[in-house]
Image (cartoon, rainbow over all chains, first blue to last red; front, side, top):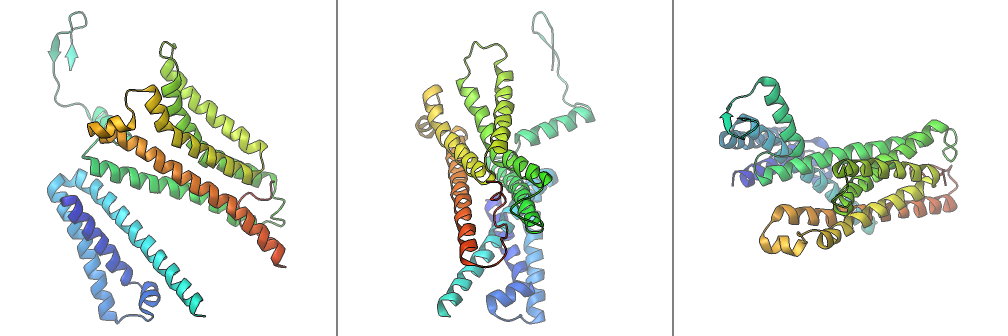
Length: 99
Length: 229
């Protein structure tokens, strides 16, 4: 259960951090978001990652908790990264069909 | 634990070992993935796999980018060719050699003296053969052939398991032995991955040729190894 919760938090955290970057805001929303919204995404993303780390460390201790967090964070980051690439490709294809 | 050499009687049990032995134990467990629950071990495998893939793709990217900067990308210099061929043996050849190690483990006769050593020898012999193959074949063909070779060996390994061991996949599945079943299923997953890589590499060749025929631009190196052929 702690694995699932921690992984979900990592996924949400990296998604929020991705939405906090100018490039992804331009690509996904077509315009940069307000500065306040960007900061909220950054803080929420960082908090989600820290919370995931806290859950694993509380359950498994620092040694195994850190190893598990490293695995969850890497896989979650990879999934978010691949999803962003997939989204960019889909939107590029759509715009190609329109033109 | 300490035992009496002649009778096997337990003499002493030491709960704690020194720092050096403890460090060795931690590194050994990390190296073999013998720690924690199965979810963490899968995470460890996937993260390590991603790291290895990053090194492999980095090697290929390096040659592709370098080729574009050469005076004549179709006729790379000697050093570039050496790096290119070493890349083939290091990436595709390593997959073949590692699978050959598992094949040797199942095929070498049991009364063979130094059997475990010969398993290791098989790994290095096959790896050297893949380097030889990469040196004598055109680079693009060497990539495709070695990737297909690795795919075939990986795909057939569970079949070999079923024929030569007491642990065929259906037996592992019916027993709920997910460690053995996981190895067989991962072999098939990796076989599919190598087949996809082989097909994509082969297609890349056609595309780059097509580009050359249909455009007037200077020949650019889309693939890492086309020119050597």
